[in-house]
Amino acid sequence: MIILIKNVIGFDVCRDGGTLVAQYEGYRGRKYCLDFPVDHKAIVEDGKFIDLEFVGYKSPVLTTYKPDFYKSPVTGIESPKTSESKRDVSWSYACKVLSKLKPLVAKANLEREDIYQKMVEVAGNGGARKNS
Image (cartoon, rainbow, N blue to C red):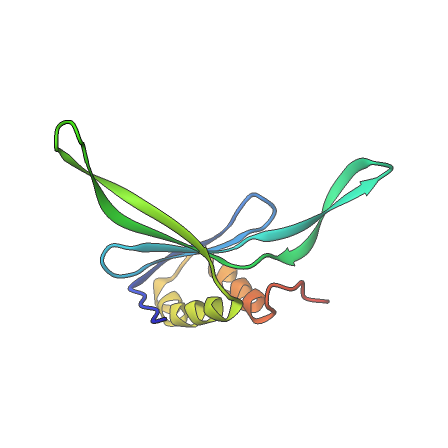
């Protein structure tokens, strides 16, 4: 699959405990969001939930946002809307996307470039927790 990237939008960490997110723009107005969902294991003692333990990351998910139009069946008026589709992708595919983003990240002077570096590390490990 050919990966065409026009611009990097940014990187973020979700408040769900650490899901890593890369947002970028393709061509024809499409925007993409590459997520590395965090994986936690519940710690339970005596049948009671105690805490969540970080395990690593689940398979990457690519969300595509495509500009579209909605045509009212009553009035026939068209209005802009955005279609959204999600699909699981491989760690290999995630590595390819991140390598295509690299030259754009260097030029963009982004606030959270550290998240890009973390995503490269995580993708290289296949989402597994790095033993320190």
